[in-house]
Amino acid sequence: MEKIDILSLDLSELEAVLVENGEKKFRAKQIFQWLHVKRVFDFDKMTDLSIQLRQRLNEIFCINGLFVQKKLESSIDNTVKYLYRLSDGNFVETVLMEYNYGYSICVSTQVGCKMGCRFCASAIAGFVRDLRPSEILMQIYQTEQDAGVKVSGIVLMGIGEPLDNYDNVIKFLGLLSDKNGNDMSLRHVSLSTCGIVPKIYELAERKLQLTLCISLHSADNSRRSEIMPVNRAYDISELLKACRYYIDKTGRRITFEYAVIDNVNSSDKDADKLADLLRGINCHVNLIPVNKVKERNYTTARSGVADFAKRLGKRGINATVRRTLGSDIEAACGQLRRDAADQKRKEGADS
Ligand code: SAH
Image (tube, rainbow, N blue to C red):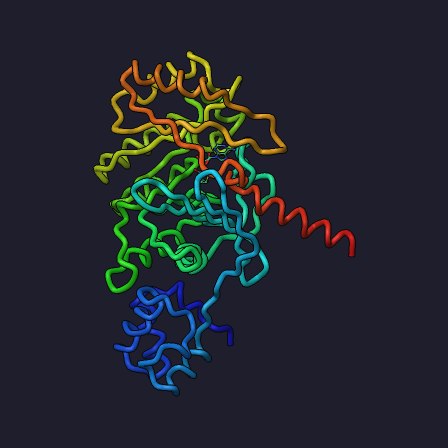
């Protein structure tokens, strides 16, 4: 019988499995705390459980840890990028960033991505599979352990499209914020999506306190469709309608992300069109200088981003420019995994 991935179970599911196996229900809370509060990932070290119970747990459950395949530390700004190997040999990336208010972590939600955004390295290496809740959670738990820090912010902006792995992401958010476990307020979590409209409506109904970030990158439908294929399924007007609904339902402000790319979306006209589109919406714009991806020719002039921000500001749109972190360690989404996947393919071809 396949062992159960215990770190993907919420407390009530854990209780149910224990009871099914003839164990006492109250043990679930104890085990849940070992995992999510004390962060002990070895049943044999759960010292207030009997040896017999620990043996049973080993028979029923597995705890799939991640292995650090590669770790790159920026010498400019203390950003640390992890390439984690999953139990099935696939890779994901996690980035730990230091800000003056604390640490923030960027986690992946899928192995690869189906969305095919032109400027994104994750799309180039292709899609393999969804991550399980435990695999998203362990990126946080193990990075905290490895780096000896506690993170105060989490962004779902690594490899993958969170709303394309909706159920597992929702489960992960539940585990992260469970009062009996890790107990993190979802106010410290940002979830970024390229704009899968039906899932934005579904998420709105949950009224979570997280910050929804929308990767917009263009206010023009034909341009957005060129750089983000998802726009052909859900265009800008449908996306904005869903965003308005989300804001109404949750009372939360939305962040729009906009990677400023020379000759693609960086002109004054582009800024004006964006300002017109967002006027009256309770939102914030985060401008990102595009991260260079070696397969693509996209660039951003720093002055271009500043001018763009200024122009938006003049038109009443609140915009900030995202700090570039870890520029010496390829911190852009998907670049390490793509290199590791290339390497694996090469080794396969050589042997
Ligand atoms: N799939 C989700 C989350 C992952 S990407 C999404 O699309 O939002 C996180 C953010 O980084 C997105 O805004 C994405 O558009 C942006 N991004 C991807 N590649 C980039 C690059 N080369 N330069 C700048 N931003 C990039």
